[in-house]
Image 1 (cartoon, rainbow over the protein chains, first blue to last red):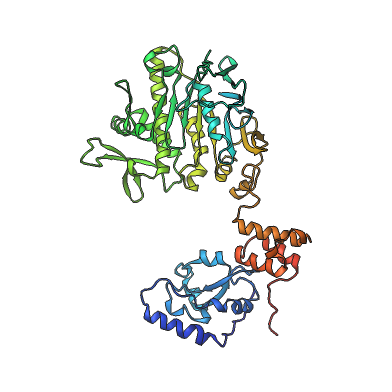
Image 2 (cartoon, rainbow over the protein chains, first blue to last red; image 1 turned 180 degrees about the vertical axis):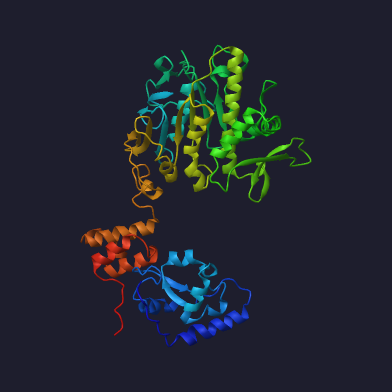
Length: 111
Length: 417
């Protein structure tokens, strides 16, 4: 295991992601697919994770922004910086809504 | 059992020879190199019947000729036929036909069956023609000259099921072997009506989500079920005919299967050939089975790795070379998985990727070996190649470590002070 320090929230995040994201969620309570406003911050997240996937701890040259608690089940965390992990795409995809599995309390407590 | 086919002045090459193994023969090759053509020739050699159209000789050839050798119970027998241009047909080559049951599954869903007891020359003249089933007649029944030649899957299945006959037990066993998994076992359900206009009770399958009439099953499932039914039906009828004729039953069966994977999900592709071999073993373990199958599916080849034995199986590749097709028996080598089969000689891809990704990796390889002349103009720098790799490859691609280590510029960002 490698211990990662929390990645500080970028200064622009509030204005570019959190506020417009919350507004969008309020306006579209039924929508399933959320606009990926976090996209432009992938590089800063990757830098914070030293270019390593947060789950495999392996060098990840492509990667994506993973919602630690899925935005499907935790919509209010979809645009929260603290819920983001830098992750390999295939791991993010296979993980899906893993927080619903048995490890739920563990995952919840660590956010 | 066919041992060898030799063609001259017919087919995709001036001359072509195929040596077949006694059990499993897998034919690979690009579209249009003549794999189906070879199956048609094999069918003709074993049955003397051309199906729809005879092989058409090359107009340039002086003496188009087809020769073949088959293994009979008395040893190898050679035969041949030349094309008679005046008569516009192949001379009848038949001195003797091998006493094998022959089953041909075509890619359009049609099947042909040749039964030495019922279709052989010298037997009852009324039934000399082989059985040609379209997708429809296999299910609804086949009649010829006012006689019922086959009741068809729908009626036979239901009557076997109601009689609790041996045929039905065999059918159940065959379906079980051909099922893709424990949870998806093919099990017959209770027969049911499917329409006001059809007075037949229809066979059904028990599915996890309920009972489904067979006629509503998927195309892939129907092909598997058709083959299972035909196999059981053919043996049953062959046994009966042999008893009536007081002849011994055939001790060989030859399967010709065009595109094994046709309509099948990978889970079924992986299962089909091993299941077919074990089915035959279960139905009649004393019967020798020869299978000649074409495939475009790497998973089909991966699936037979545990079964393959070099002395009785063959991997045959047809390749286009200099405007003509060359047949090659390839040495067998396990590839381990479907991706490795794709990049093997049998399929001949450089990489099992998109063309763009293949191009980016080729450029990266050229960059790493310092071959700047081989770089495409838009991928002439390290950064351009890197950006293209990021666009096209997943982060866990096994190519990354080589590229990152070789170009000494890991994307890893320095730890903040």
